[in-house]
Amino acid sequence: MRSMTGYGEGKVESEKVDIYSQIKTLNHRFLEIEINCSQPIPFLWEKRIKEYIKERIKRGKVILNIEIKRKEPFLPKAIINQELASRYHQILSQVSNNLGLKREINLSHILSLPNVILLDKEEKNKENIKTFIEKSLIKALKEVLQTKEKEGEEHLYSIQKYLKRIKKRLFKIEKEIPLVEKNYKKKIEKNLEEFLDQTEKKKIAHELSSLVWRGDTSEERLRLQSHLDQFQNTLKQTEPIGVKLKFILQELQREINTLGAKANAFVISCLVIQIKEDLERIREEIQNIE
Image 1: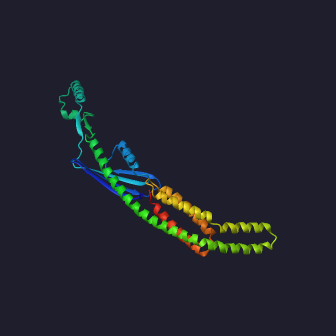
Image 2: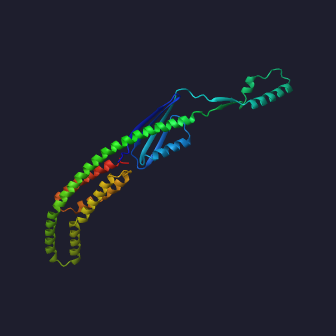
Image 3: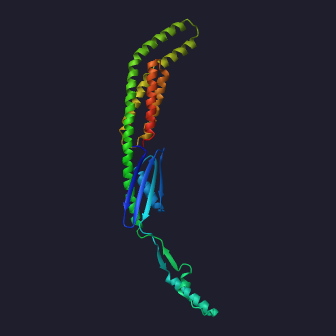
């Protein structure tokens, strides 16, 4: 079981560039990936990074910060378009002769014309930078997954503690049930004696069905135990379980609410309230489970 919150760093150094990756993961309903880079990177690189993260993290907000630090400034390569320069020189010489100009055409005139000097901004070590980013990302992801698993173990410990308390309280409820049913039976018998003297049959039937409904908690107790077993088994699974635990917890809360509504004894009502408190604590824990 893994937490949705975690932190990891990865750094790769080379002669010309250092790459530093930092990953923070936060609670989020779905998977959301945000990439911030100190320098623009190609869209395909960013797409591949997101795919790599999705393979390892299934839920939560992932914030990836990438810092590219060059040890030497990148200088684009200058390329002279000699063919175009020669053509410019030919045209300018022709115009100069036609106008009878005596001033000679020099190199500075030609170099100042459009597209004579071209700058090659494509880095030769671009693929190396991509590789370094991937290596730093792998390191950061490894670290963040370790922290997520460590926090997940802490959540698991807390959840198991609350489940243990819930089971103890359900056991106490089971022990109280025979006495509660006995007292409730006496109450029904007393009510029957009072109602038999009356002629309103519909009122008697309604009261009887209400009394029977309030006295029978066997289905709720059975479903509670079944959901607890399901919850416990889900905790043992290796894949992301946060959403599944949330749904099972909703069923547990529904059953304990019904049990509380049917409770006919002060002791059981108190135990139900305590179970609700523990279920709420479990809900807070699983909000951070991936």
